[in-house]
Image (cartoon, rainbow, N blue to C red; front, side, top):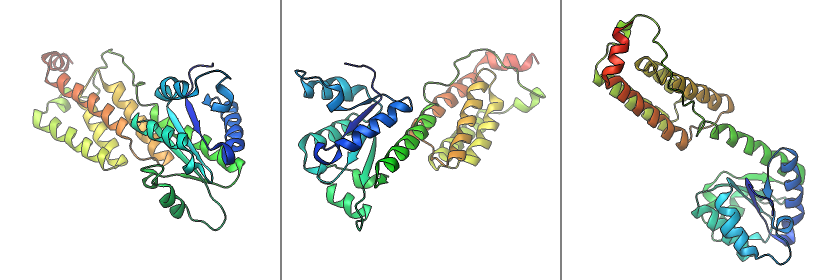
Amino acid sequence: MEKDFEIFLSYYTRTGLDYAEELKKALRDNGWKAFLAHHNILPGEHWKDIIFNYVLPHIKYFILLYTPGAETRKWTREEYKYAKRLGKTIIACVYMPVGESVGDILTRIEPAFPGISEKQVIEWRDKSELNSKVILTLERYQKRRLVIGHLPQTRDVIQPKGNSQNYHVDHQDITLLVEMAILEAKSNKKVELIKTLERLSLYTTIHRTKMETLIDYLNIYIKEDLPISPEFIKEMEIVLHEIVLEWKSSDFQKRLGDE
């Protein structure tokens, strides 16, 4: 069986298999590896073991392809609940029959898929709309995830620009700026956060590249109209903690004095 699936497609065979197969093809054509049980599990293989022990723990994205009746299928419900327990990114795609509202559908299927009524979902009526919306959503998630695990790890010293007097600040100043940055991030104030991070960049020589990368991705969030993710905030807090430690070190003060 093929390895390294990024996406799991969960569907109801009676009403959703045709849509799932077309979505798998569209994803493949756009460079994504999606797991589809009807295609990727061979006769004689233990399907429950493959899905719950092999595939679901390792995928990044769980796509719930909701079509009429999907809430009645036990294993569609179990796949969703297990992906939720694993903390996977769940993208719910809800088929919209004419005359029904998405709110009514989500309320009706909430008992089968706990928490789904609290999520932003993809609404679709045909294969083309489903495929294009899913691929666009995945691309936006991919941009958001670029921050995590891809910040430069260089330890090269970047000398501060300008007069070293600009860097002679006390511990209270940097602590207040760090607290301000975290508050702005959690409040999704992207423009204000960029300005605060630019000020905090003055306190570092070895972490400035990381700070510039954080600012670059904030600009992506602004351009794509995306909210600041919890993962970004976590990574930012790590970088800011390293900057505080660097600023407090005698080595940092020595570098400033050598200018």
